Length: 109
Image 1 (spheres, rainbow, N blue to C red):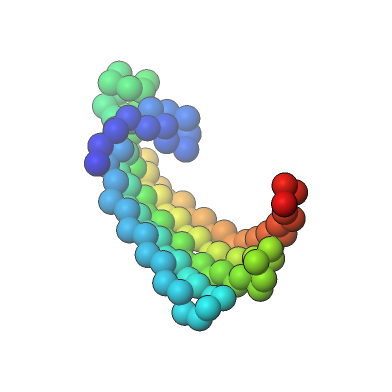
Image 2: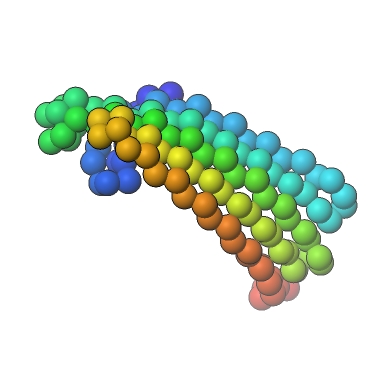
């Protein structure tokens, strides 16, 4: 899939992407997710941006979700991103982890 997109440095480029998203319920109240993607951002100087853009990035994101009750959900997610900036021959890695606790309260019942 190709579409104009904004790169992390707020420059516009044509993005080609391949994305996979999976989910599976292991137990009645426990499920897991896995999403991954590979992205290519390209633009010639003067096409969409002042500078030439040539970036290749990859992302993987596994997670686990526990539905303790109908109104209490705990989720843990890890995400790894890698970006190769081909025009400057540099790269960047990002590791991100978070816990999400959702508490729901029925207001209109």
